Amino acid sequence: MFKEIPQLPGVYKQLLDAIDIGIHVINHEGKSIIYNKKMSEIEDMNKEEVLNKTIMDIFLFKSEEESRLLTALSKGSVHRNAKQTYFNFKGQEITTVNDTFPLIHNNMTIGAVEMAKDITKLERLTRETSKEKHDARFTFEQIIGESSAIKEVIHNAQRATRTSSSVLISGETGTGKELFAQSIHNGGHRSSRPFISQNCAALPDSLIEGILFGSVKGAFTGATDHPGLFEQADGGTLMLDEINSLNASLQAKLLRAIQEKSIRRIGDTRNRVVDVRIIATVNEDPILSLEKNRLREDLYYRLSVVSLTVPPLRKRKEDISLLVKHFIQTYNHRFQLTVPGLTDEVSRFFHQYDWPGNVRELEHMIEGAMNLIDYDEPIANIHLPIHVRKKVPSPPDEAMIDKPFKQSPLLQAVKPLQVYMEEVEKAYIANVLSMYDGNISQAAKKLGIKRQSLQYRRKKFKL
Image (tube, rainbow, N blue to C red; front, side, top):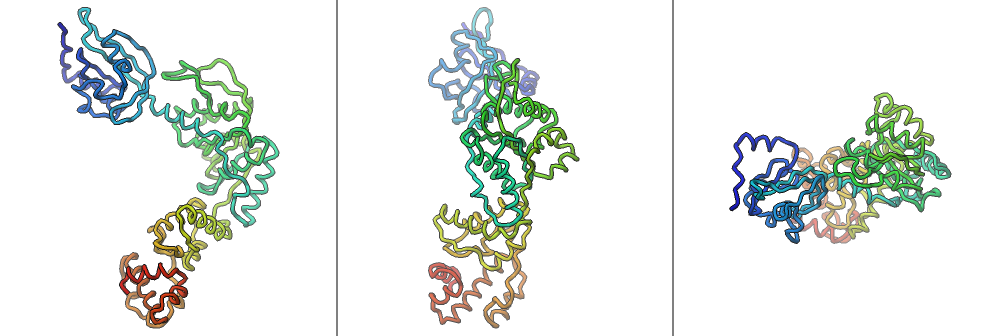
């Protein structure tokens, strides 16, 4: 006769919930009787969803043979430090390194226990970085701008395609540093080889070394033979974005790899020769990175054999019209619209605004505006994000058509901006329709919008 596993006193339950290892225990019937806090976090399930239920009710196994807990219970099998990938009943993938073994009492198996360490995040990051091969899509012809500031950077970057020297690209967030990195790769003799991009700020220090240099089986819990980004980029280009976010120790190892043209996987005893061109980026002035000890001086000099600085949009405002035209064409095609451009006041605002998010902010602002447009009309103040609408200067009085509109009490009222803008728009359209005796075609032509758009507004404002 089976002996039941005794109930745990409260103090032991507290201890189980305090440790940083997942614990799952089943009894002789295969029902869960212990499920600690860490295991709940690893498998994203509440204790109530697990306790007193069988393993096959909790996890998506094809058969009991796939569950190590059940095979430990039924066959007495033992697994030590073994990696396992499985799915909970919600369909979520979980990867752990487990110790699984039966619980024996008086020579009888009374249950089984599994102790788990979570490596789901490491597995996901490894897969994601492995997918970034051959991802260089941009060329110099796709960099938009006619200003002298951007033309100078393009010219210097084109000259850098002739060699395999390291390149350091600096510039504020959103200026297009990766466009230049990809263009340099595609313009040189490495264009047919891999281009791999890695944002160094997106990964914790504990993972970035293994992702850059790779690992060998047994180097750490759950480690497998895995090539790092240097090996994956062999013969091609490795772009390291925000390199100033790496800690000093990793910067030293990176410098050694660049100088010796070889890497050593974590846990390995031999070096592997790699042929990789490094293009690194920083999102601030490199001199400031040096002064703030965010970038090692020796690494800076090794990377900046070719040094490029991409100017912020506020220093190349003559390119705004070209960029706006390009983005509107792009999203017209994507959204099946025929937006003609910007209203005069929005155009003036775009050329006065400082664009802290640079070209990326401009693109996102246009994309957002085109999501709000009802018909094929110019992008107006009302279509812009709320946080910038109030920054758009009001149109001059001369643009208000006629005297009755100028004297409208609407202009004297203090109201929420959205309400005010709709009332002004209604009054403005009413004045224009009045000027043309209600002729929709002539009024629409004067307003610079389509007949359908004007008809829509007539219904909206009940004119």
